[in-house]
View 1 (cartoon, rainbow, N blue to C red):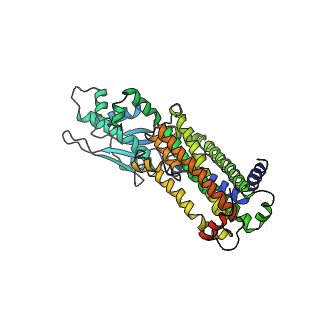
View 2: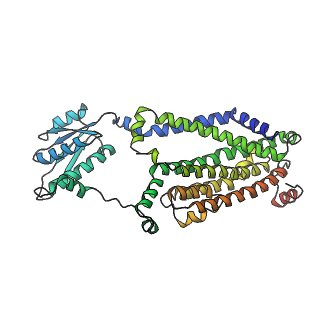
View 3: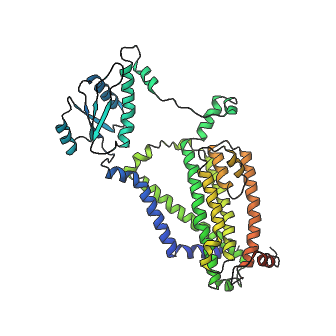
Length: 431
């Protein structure tokens, strides 16, 4: 332990001072900031800042009742995204002038009604397509007005009309849940799979992938760099190769945590800006519905998964003598990390699939698949425990294997050793 701590401190302090670390961190922080501001920038350049409501012209002509119903429905909406400016007749020149000077962004016009058929609705503006925010507001409003128009003269109340026009939402529920403990079980399941829990699962999956790609490659590059510069020959005389390996892994883990903390701070600062608060509020994330057990399981598997991949990166880096050959050498580990990421991302909509159940017990992909099954699916604590046990056994085995490879590889120079040469050299050392 006395020799391990200096290695950890040296690795951490040495890496955070390098230009590559600073430049990479700044670039990722800028990309995150730009990505968060994309919706606002799109609105700003499209002329819809979102801070004020859009003024839309309404030419009612021969349909004053429909226009009045539409105006009444929109006025009742709490968000106030659009306002209507009524025109009795479609005076093309006057409407164009109002669009040119910004009084209105466009105008609605109703065609002739035939019998019970709702009249055709036309929207005219200077753009080729309707703004998505405007469309999402007008569509339900027109549906409601249409229902009132079609059922006019009947004895239906406004509440009944609203109930008829409301879309039907189908919730998925497994048979054993429905036949189990009734509504209490359904309520418990609903709280577990709340939107905020999906965000936690998604964030931890992305976090796991980013950590593997960044810190894993940094570990391999650090080992290869020291080996190619012959510093390794000096280091092994004072510190054992195994202490070096685990010291570098822990040091790089702290480097990765520092980067993650910086990125989280950048995201939090950008989301705290006033014009991003509205977009965040639309997500309807209720932190009171957060399941802390999902966060706990995710962090445990994130840390253990990191150490599994880190030992492999260190072992591969130790058998490469030139940094030019490092990319090709770590490619198999990178492919494993990509496989884990894509399996999880493409299974977000089906967390109880057979593929995920099998992958939950494969150590290289289990850190993200079991998290997805537990956070968004129906994995039990027993399944989580079995997956955790398999992962721990895999870490112990691959740490032992990586230690033997590292102990042998750091002092092998020249061409990359073959499997036969490496196996023969490994037999000479006892771990």
